[in-house]
Amino acid sequence: MQIIKIRQSDGTLRRYRNAEFIPAFLMIPEVLLNRTNQEMITLKRTPRALFTDPETMQRVESDNFLQVVIDAYAFLAWPYMNIKARMEDYSGYDPFWVIAHAVPLWIRELEELNLLPQTGDFYRQTLRTPDEHFGFTPDAYVSMCMKAIVPRVMQKNGFDKMYRYIRLHRCHEDFGSRQSHDKTNFYVRWYHTDTAHPTKISTEVLQLKSYTKPDFCFNTDGELEESVWDRVEAEAFRNTLSDEDKKILWLRWNGMKQEDVAKAVGLSTHSAVSKRIQRIGREFERFTGKRLGFTSP
Image 1 (cartoon, helix red, strand yellow):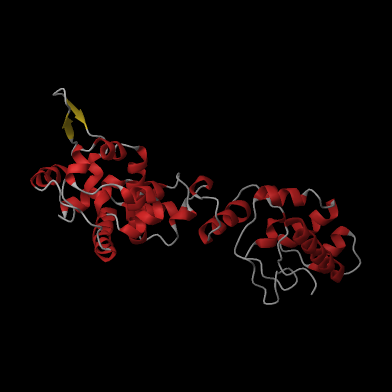
Image 2: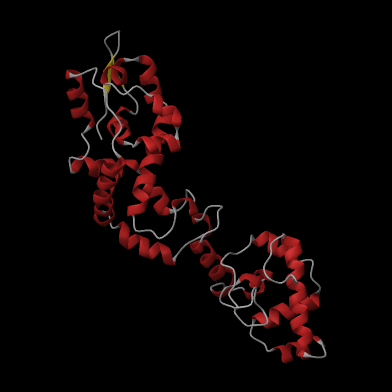
């Protein structure tokens, strides 16, 4: 990406910060600007203003301008990165969230395919028509361009192979605060199946979707909810249980039959174990304020 230098009134040259992103900014669809930052909708879109007007140049050099470009191109690129989840599901530590926001990757590819003019060429061309107004680029055209360049960038840099590896080796920091299918699966594996520390298993077992025994499910057809509660909340609830209740959950989770659990904890029948589990489930509903199917009609 080319750096643009502007001659000042004293004859010296200074770098025009963020000017290399002006062509990319002008390509952002109006609907996306409205969604991300309405302040930039009012930015003057003529060469005279963009390269000579002090107020407009000051706005171009702002961090806000650069952030709008980065966020917009990340949003435009994500659907074509072949990632089966929303970008909002991940945090800024996720490798592909970082790649999506690496806007020079997308701009360079657009320039190579002549879908976007290089900054220097754009600057020289606009000097001939300083008052030409640049309208907003149609959504369909921008989508077509991103659909063409994103897979090329992914393949060219080996990101597609990297993604297959990263999916198998996720970490906590990759995920954002919102719930998602990938986040659920990761937490289930981390705390309950892949961990080498079984003592960490808590009442989160109530939400393991792999456990579908009829006497330990959230609804009548035995399907569990596809979300995992915050571990702190689960641990706080576990601390409210008696040692006997904790032991019952632990033994049932490890596959022991109800009859054997009853003998292990000193209950009279296996139905007493089932009733105890249902009672714990109702207590958990009251503790979290969430309806999971344990509450009686």
